[in-house]
Image (cartoon, rainbow, N blue to C red):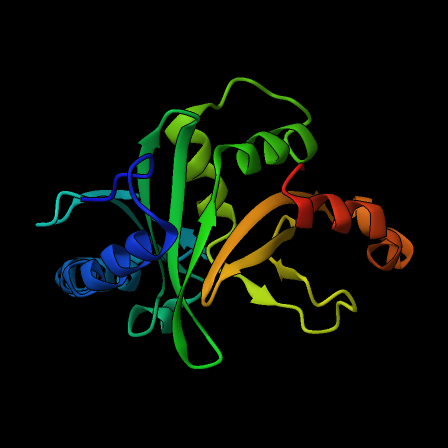
Length: 204
């Protein structure tokens, strides 16, 4: 079971990667029902209610299915993240691939505060696990940006904006903050050196 307060980053990485096959098996089980539902739909895109899943290792996962067209009945966009309570709030973890190897993206509570402040304009109607589900329903996929000149920073883009973080250990990335595309107009991303320094020092 994932215990943020008592585990090292490497221990959390191992726990999540080892639990991955359990989540994959659950996803495969859910896919048949998803496929039938997509084939019945006439309007797209369609996103189904997030599925809460507790794995045999007692980890709490959220599974999200998205279809942009009827063709996605056979190849849907599938997002799954693990949530864990800690002293500072709810942490979220996503298993992905980076340069062909399994990696873990970690989203601390502060990240979602920044998302709410900057994208939702401080709207407090959505909080906690509901805010997390809202974010990943809107942002089911992330693409890394290799063009950032400051290689200390790991930058990923999603539907609503840009996530900035650092590679804390090999294949373990901490997403420290969120920026809207509005904040990045006119290529301002290349002028955020002070923010990059703050991120690297762990203060943002």
